[in-house]
Amino acid sequence: MRKSARLEFGKLLREMHPADSTEELHLKRMQGLLARATDPFSRQNFEPGHFTASAFVLAPQRDALLLILHRKLGLWLQPGGHIEATDRDLIAAARREVAEEVGLPELELLSGGIFDVDVHRIPGRKNEPEHEHFDIRFLFRASTRDFVAGHEIAGAKWVPVTEIGEAHSDPSVLRATKKIERIYRGTA
Image 1 (spheres, rainbow, N blue to C red):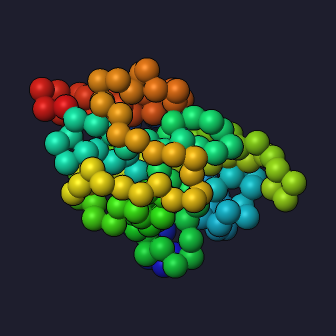
Image 2 (cartoon, helix red, strand yellow; image 1 turned 90 degrees about the vertical axis):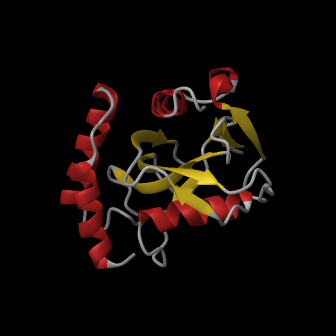
């Protein structure tokens, strides 16, 4: 990722208005990581962790959210993942992850800036210690409901926004969905 992207990202973090105290805590931790870490975007930065990028993708009619079934966690989550050195910025990283995981290349950015932030623990594996993902989330709208689940995920589906609570997901997805419902109340 370009050096200037780090400055642009810092500006996006400063401009973000957290929706609640949970998100405010995540935002403060992210600002601290950006200020202290030499390369907070590298997946090799384990103490305490590194930034990731993900996307909440609404259907063209804004009535459903695209969720993927995470292989290791067994949860329905938003598409996303690690930032690569070739990504122009975090929005590009989120778009790339959506294209890789569900084959949707055309996405309209709805959030303008960062839509949501979340910090969550990742269990250790044989070649990685336990660490945290500092997930930067953007809100997009797909131009079509047609997608193809990639080999990295166990499945994908459109879930009506009003039924996200019934999907086997995590609290951060439910929190973000409440934000989507507030934004599109009456149209979602």
